Image 1: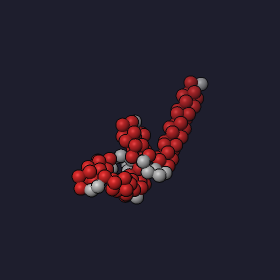
Image 2: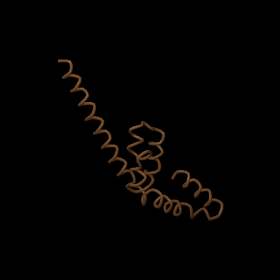
Image 3: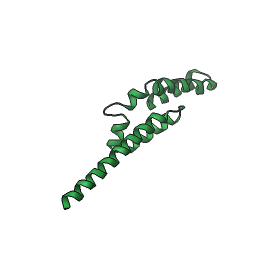
Image 4: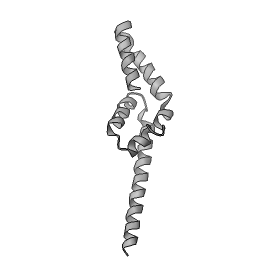
Length: 104
């Protein structure tokens, strides 16, 4: 998505008047990110959960940059982040409880 936005921005600067850029980029962002947000964010190997699980900080920051530009774009990202943190917390608590019960 980031590469498509860059290419579109380059095309605007070559073929269209500069005043067209904000409107066109807004449309492209909407089509690339809003329309397909669920599919992009839930992809098994490259979606938000996978990036969080695999500590892909650079990719997560790219996702943040892209989705922060659209209205309410970070809502699904924040929901997935909350789910991830909650699941990790539950796992850590369970591991601590298991370790404590094994020491007795």
